[in-house]
Length: 440
Figure 1 (spheres, rainbow, N blue to C red):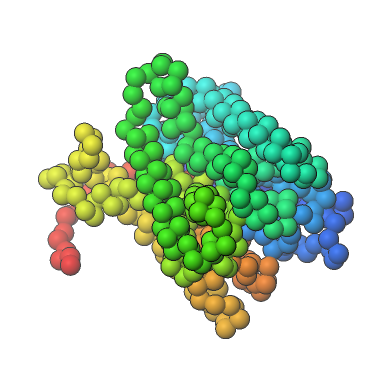
Figure 2: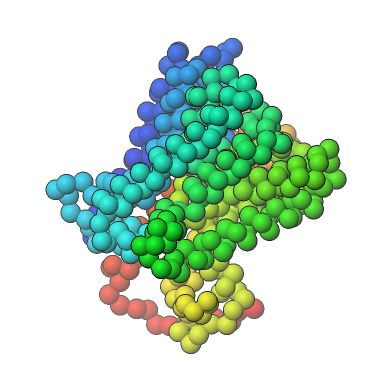
C-alpha cells in the first residue's frame, strides 16, 4: 500500500514537472523569443512554472515572446488550469487500469461523491465546460478588442480568455490590463471568467443542473462555496473602495472606482490580472490583498490558495460551539471533526511554507527589497495569484528559484497532502492512548 501511495504521488509530481520541463525547452527555442537579449534558462523555467502552475508572475515581459512562444505559454496555462484533479482523474480513468482505493478516495474527497458514479463522464464534463466558457469569453473579448483597436485582436482574445478562466493572469500586453481600467465590458468579461474558473467544476455543474431543472437544490458544498465567494468578493470590493477612494482610485469617477475595486477584489483570489498598479496601493490594501491571496478559490477549480471551504471550516470551528463528537452544526448540516482537523492542518502547513519561503527571500534579498513587497511576492507565488508590486524581475537568481519552488508547492501541495493523509487512514490499525493538553 505504501508503494502504491508513493507511486500515485510520484505520478502527480512528475506530470507537472514534465510539462514544465517541456515548456521550458520550447520557450528557449530561438523562434519563441523576440527580446533584445537571449532568454536565460532560469527565466524560461520561471515562465513555464508560472504558466503551468497558473500563477502569472513574470520575470520577462510576455509581450516580448513571439506568437509561437505565446501559444506555448497559453497551452501550458490550459494544461495547468484544467486542474490537478482533472488530470489525475483522466489518468486513473484510462482503459485497462484499475482505480486504487487510495486514489479513488482522494478524488472523491475533492469532488464530493460524483467521481464514484462515472469518472470518465466527470472528466468529459470538465473539459467540455472549460472550452464552452472559454469560447464565450473569447467571443466577447474579440468583439471588444476589435472595437478598441487592439492589434491581432483574435489571438489576444483567445489568450486572455484561457488565461482568465484558468486564473493565470498572463497578458500579452506589457502593462497587463491597466490600459482598460474603465472598460466595463472587458472588465466584467474577465471577472466572469475568473469567478467561474475559481468556483470549481462541481459547483458550476451543480448550478447548471438546477438551472436546467434536472435537480431541485444545489448541494451543501455549493451553498458554502457560493456564500463564501460572494462574501469575499463584495466584502473585498467595499474595503478596496473605501481604502483607495482618495488613494489609487483618486482620479477616477465614482462608477470607475466601484469597477476598479470589484476587479481588484476578484483578481486577488488567484487570478493575477491587474487594472491598477499594485505598487500604488496603500499598506492596508496590501494587507487585505495578502489575506485574499492566501484564501484563493474553491476546491476542484483552476484557482489556488488554501480554498474558501478551508477558511469557512476554520472560521466556523473558531466561532461556533462544538458538539460532543467535535463536529459543528451550520445551516442544517453537520461538519465532521475530521474536516475541522484537516482544515486547520491545511492552514498550518500553508503558513509554515509561506513563512519559510518568506524568510529565505529576506535572507537572499537583504536590504534591496522592502519587507511588504517580499511578503506580497511570496504569498502571490504560493496562492498561484501572480500579482506583484514590481519586484519579480529584479530578484536575484537564488530568490527566483525560491519563488519557482513556492509556485510548484502551492499548485500541487493540496493534492500531495491528500495522498499523505490517505496513507495514514488506510494503514492505521491501532490508536495511541488519548492524552490531554492545556490550551489557552
